[in-house]
Image 1 (cartoon, one colour):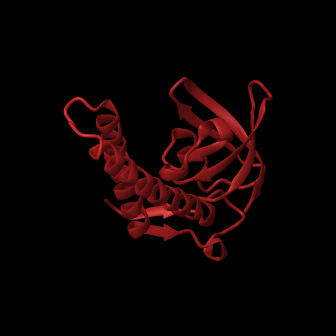
Image 2 (cartoon, rainbow, N blue to C red):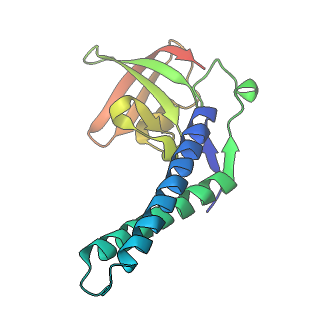
Length: 155
């Protein structure tokens, strides 16, 4: 796995999730211990469920620990704040429809399109990288080519 570029907020979110998973791991370990004490494990649905849940938690912990180990925090002081880069909060306008949208350009790990956080690897973000306020960009998206005007950039 290559470096994982994260915003400070994204790194904190991953660390928080990891801490919560450590707590869940302790709870599930206790649950497994209690179900073991109930006797025959082959027919114990509670034990089987707990073991599956434990496996999911352990996998996610491993993913997050790897992400944190490979994390590179984007230093906002080193970014040219006149143009769109990772961590930028932007407002763009679709020139055809006139619709205005707000997005934050984040890492793949932080991506949450339903909440306006788009991955730096997405076609839209790739087409916007390096753009400045009032610049117009023609971007090829999965649903066709569109033109956007950059209305604002904040960090």
